[in-house]
Length: 283
Ligand code: SF4
Image 1 (spheres, rainbow, N blue to C red):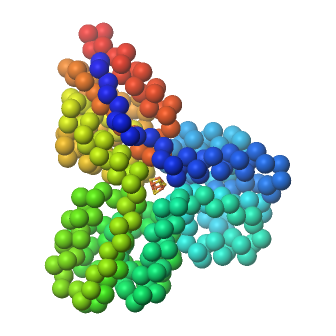
Image 2 (tube, helix red, strand yellow):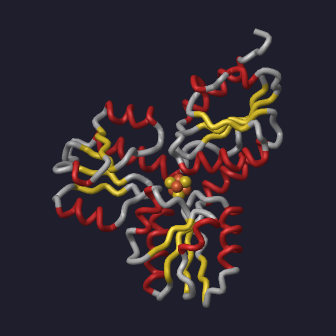
Image 3 (cartoon, rainbow, N blue to C red):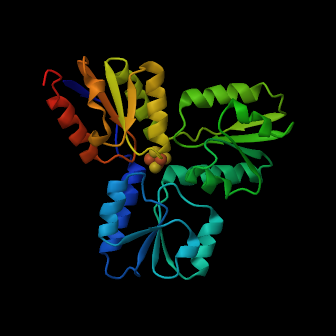
């Protein structure tokens, strides 16, 4: 089968930095042990397991850590969580992506300027929760159905989760704009790396018979890629690896496209492509 891979896909600089930082901390003899990561370092079980094999312990909450070093993953955390970690005397290694840090700083700044902070994104996503933790009052809106949560009038300061799509941001701003607010201040906090991945996935999925989006089912940016591709090619499938693929899907297809989320390692992409290329539905 002919296979085309999206021009931009796989690990983004923020994820690469977090993994590299974890490896460095684990290898340094002087880092206080054990080394913890607050939440899975990325939404990929293989990577989490590989790092666990070299000593990285993944925990869900600050309460589970009493000694050693704690790594903050690329999604970042709320300042209150950082304070609690500091008060426990832990060594903190902050691998928050610079672009996520920027959203946190922009949200704080908007609140200081007197705006009610609005975040366009997924309420339960760790990045959004970290940003929310930087402001006293903030509202998260995922889609048009959440607009009733906005204050009835006032000055809104709007940011968005880094991995949202420009289309969705535009739609939401259009809908908010109809709300009769006194003032709207919008700071575009979309991640260019995520947008580039979305653009190349959309371009590719229109040229192929079937499109595969590889990445963790909990990964927001992978889910967003799959959603966008599905809008342009109904034969789009979000999978974690080759084993998950129902091979019947490939029957009668000539060209397959492959893209992957920002937390999908190259070896997962390479293996998937290798199997696809070798696939022959005539047996
Ligand atoms: S997708 Fe963008 S914002 Fe998120 S970690 Fe990667 S580079 Fe940073």
